[in-house]
Length: 387
Image (cartoon, rainbow, N blue to C red; front, side, top):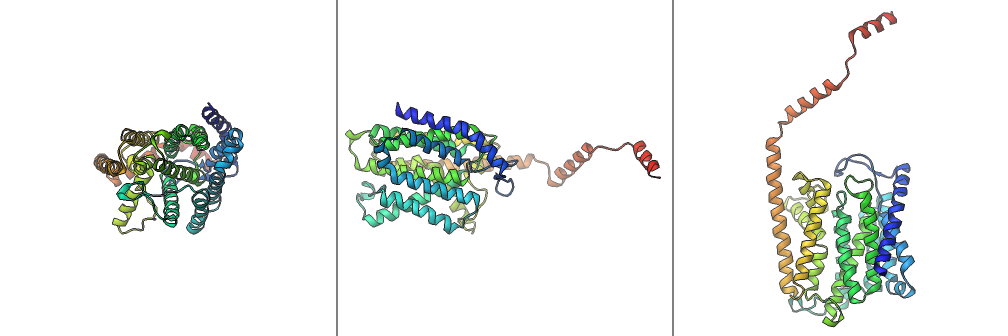
């Protein structure tokens, strides 16, 4: 009951606050200008993350009791810090090192202070426990990598929000059943807040989340995923729903940003480019080239993510030695298949399109036809009046 209440509260707060935020951002000219890698049309307000993060935290403040706050205080503080890192980057572009520095402080707070970390490989490759310092370093690296991977996937209307809702719903339900109630409530608060944002972010979007939102969501999801993995790896069957392949299931929770980032980095390196160089080679760009609309791409990738989670649930009794190859193999096969279909569709579109010169001539002729012609009589009368 409380999970539904905190979700509903976050949704209502966000739903009524976001239209106000959109007007404020438009008046203050905080907008995302089209062009370059920006694939939207028109001037759309950014920093929509303010709306759903505020809705989430207000809902948490209303429904958390003292014990809930105590258990999650470091996580909530780190979440707030990551929000301000994204906010500052949206307002005044931070350098890569400045942004990374803020993210590292937030990751340190949850890994070292809150002790949310990977304590081992839980039997995968015969490894159970790992040294504490390696655990700290590995956990911080994973949080930073996944946070920025999620930030990269925020490239079109409704995509990042849809993927986040699916992940938070899965994690929230599992935390609830397992007894990690504060983290379950936070997850459901995020579901409500992001749902309210999707009302205005669905294609055609009236607002974007910006780094303010994508970094906050990526950080929360990566941290909660690590908590989910470690809890599964150290619990017994009687403690709740046990996934015998915690690492593979964690991969499934964030499979789209993980696969997209690895795929983009490999493609850029093969072309002799820096893996950090921005371009339009992300998976959502490829799906758009197939002729899909923003909402169709978002729904397609959301369904794919649900399929991966379904496979993880079906294989919950299998170990990571089995499930990691299954999840990784599915992602690779699906990605190669999508690339092949996209390339075929692009070639087909190019063959049907008229040559560039013909297209330019047709466009010029169309503009000439639309240009109003001034009647000759008016021109003559104007000349007589001038004389």
